[in-house]
Image 1 (tube, rainbow, N blue to C red):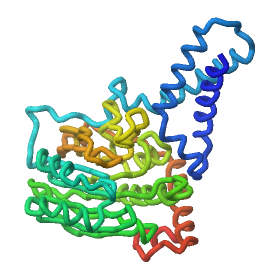
Image 2 (tube, one colour):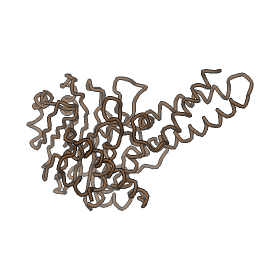
Image 3 (tube, rainbow, N blue to C red):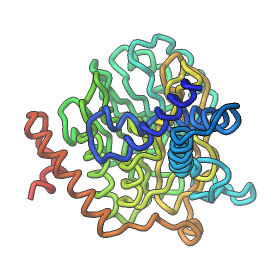
Length: 370
């Protein structure tokens, strides 16, 4: 019986630990394994309820706390299941319009991974309009050169620090800008994609550092980078897509705040998790790779692709734009408190970057200094 109570106490502790509004990785790390915490908690609950033995005060207190913890975990993860209302509508078969569509494969390849052909096979199979690769270095760039004949528009940022980034496009790219928002080590790609119909779409490709003992000690810069982009997007009245490995889960405080600030939607809400990391451990997975989009897009298809030798699975998504979708899809409501929280997180990120002497001259960051 003691091990059941210990497991229940761990679930309770991790749940309430995740509520502490701190940026250090040992706090933010509790955001990630909510599905695993929920699974362990349900097993512990069943044993607590049905294990023969006396019901003393300790057992009753643990049961009450465990139920509260499981209720909170369910609140966080249920939106990414079919029981929830869909945030993004699905395009009906009789309404499909290829000229208004954009398809993409997003893949964190893991720099040391040398199974290049597995990703190339998926690209050749699905023939997406866009291919975004993360953690790509010069070697990966050379190996992916075989797809260049199909992708005349390219943005290459090969790096050896696990934050290289490459964007391949069949669609015309305009106003391409590689930004280093808060760190001269972490690039992001900002550009305009021209659909076959001629409609422009603002595209943001991101890959901030995760809060972890081997990367960033806290989530301050990651959160600030995401919110800076979100704050810029809210000023636009244009079609927009944000995609990449955000090193954060969909249900985290920061990602949900980003959605409210930017007004972008998540096609996974009301459907499925699309857990992409860790590809090698079936029971230790969560969603790190994301696609968010403006309200004029609806979903045609979104799926996780097969293992390519990386620690991430690639994601394939097809979206279709249309004014009709804007009329039936709504942004998440933003409050004054959201705006204050976002601005505070942005300011803290800029101050931290300046303190660490990593910030570069960038017009986005400069706008927030005042």
